[in-house]
Amino acid sequence: MTGQARRRSVHIGGFKHANPIPNASRIGNLVMSGVILGRDPVTGAMPESLEAQCANMFAHMKATVEAAGGSTDDIIKMTVWLKDRSQRGPVNAEWLKMFPDERSRPARHALPLDMEGGALVQCDFTAVID
Image (cartoon, rainbow, N blue to C red):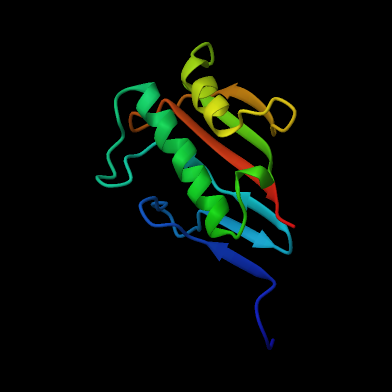
């Protein structure tokens, strides 16, 4: 095989998976992330509060889509997993900061998940970058 690989791994500083996988992968104009947690980007520790985890998670999502060559305007779908699905308030607060225009928001749904390591929330996203 010669030339550049069709698929490109996307990595960001301050947030790295424990397993040998990238933060996201891009083929053409399609970007799909792996799981994004709310770990502190400096210490790597999982904050105790859902609010802090949500703020970190959205910041990691933004950094990931930007490292792939896009912006948050390119995100078309987001899936959120919550330890307690009834606790969507902190997710919604960060959602509205990142996507303030109700006429231009990605699709999203929230699912329950029993997470480990103190995680209360995690997400993934799909983006289309023109």
